[in-house]
Length: 318
Image (cartoon, rainbow, N blue to C red; front, side, top):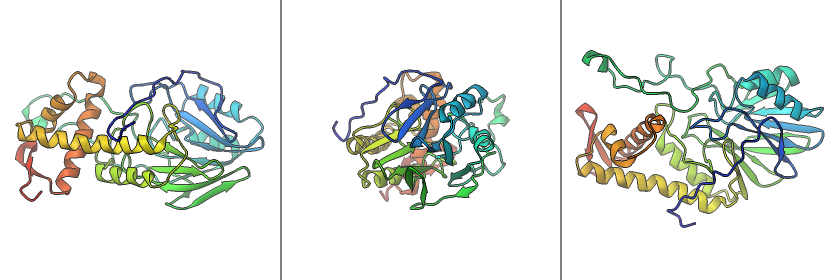
């Protein structure tokens, strides 16, 4: 794989309700919540041995899934419940699992709310004055604002139990509270939504930040983990080339944005048309937000200048 080529693996079978052994310390149980943003569904990881496990990203608040998860755990003790991010496909089942097992929950912190306390708007402020507004479809699975970890972890913290030892790796960008977990026993990293082998990751402001995201990718490139285990999709067995291609893709997208702006495609909607022709309507909202994240990043870096009316131009200071 060259540093600019991304090859996605979409071969993961949709096998629900039963844990699959991936390595000596790792099992994965797939939640039955497939969608354009979750791929086959949420991959819940059980990490440990025959007596003790930690659970990473327990998944959605679905009774059938939660029953399957508790059955897969069986008689083993759950020492820790680790959450990578607070989206509704990752963290809501933590409450039921905590009640069933007594285990504490761990994560960076609660979900970031917009200033109004609701989800970010997907239409320009004041647009209602021009007539009825068409609200775009939601992107991803939405924030889980009910989740607050029992234990707030930070970059470099260690979480350990009998059969496992994790190092916390803070990776803001996809969300402001995104945390990865490195399993010391196998030198692998559980990457949540930060890196996924089946697709690129949506960066949706205001919680998502493209500058932070690209810095977090650079951080993982320096780590040299042997395997990446995303919450959605198959394991990434060649992390170095894949991560470099992931980062190169983002840099390429910003070059495309700069070229398109010089050709008059100087608003987010026009850029989506130019860069994402033929994209499914279900994904256009996500594409729009990711373009806006790039525009914010390029403006902060003074490569672009924001103009009235949602327009942009290349900065003379670049």
